[in-house]
Image (cartoon, rainbow, N blue to C red; front, side, top):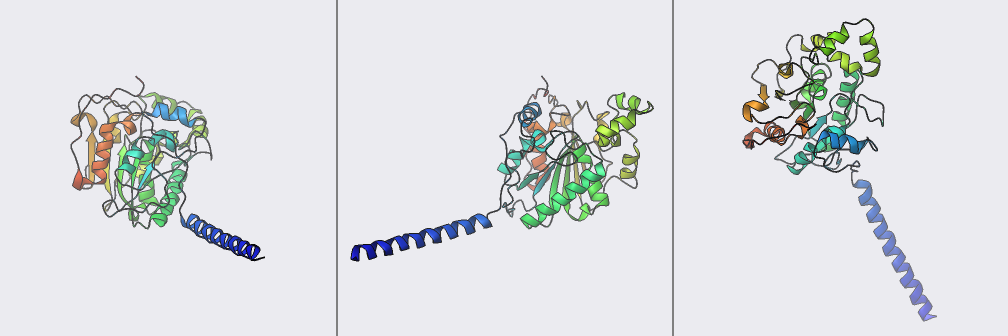
Length: 313
């Protein structure tokens, strides 16, 4: 009987220990903020697009750790804003990890498209910007930061300006860094201008990609966005553009008007042999260095120029 009592006491003790351990584990798990599923680093946007075909909701590597707490060195989290038709993984699955490795809390999402769709950032820019603004609020709440910085590619570097101008983003965004942004639209070497002039074509194009029409040179959307000045005080703007941009044409349409808080950079003025095009600019290592410099100008470094082949070569 003594052995049985001892056995019962031992069993009860083990159960109590297990219960306590389970309680502690479950409490810790409940307190731990989740991290969204991420994919691996990719060498270019084509490889990233192919990888994301089977799972377009993957987050870029190093992003969306909702337990990330900004450091004193990098107090502002970084939001990555996608270009037209691109999902977050496709657009950012290289630079995102570089930013995370540099110590930033990095976030990215899919907006302006059907949930779960491979194609994103095609809806009306006003809607996409509103969704980004809500995502930005979530980032600020999760990290406890007072402001965030945004890095945007193509449309993603332009439509944030709608958030800043019309949705209170001027109080929440410290820096906007545009990579080949469509700030003054594009004529796609004249093609888009021609299509826009054909009766019925703008309506058809708008059904599939409302934001495409809005990015046409001299569109009513861009006229309203740029009216009264294309920047606002209190936000630092950096534009990084390539001479070989085949989407935003002419490439000078990416640049903002000169102002004390505007820094326009042409890649080839720094590295003449950089052949990066519009699609390749988020994956360009020189661009990556310039982004880090813009985020933390006090510790800026000179880019190491090297030949960068076009993304489609």
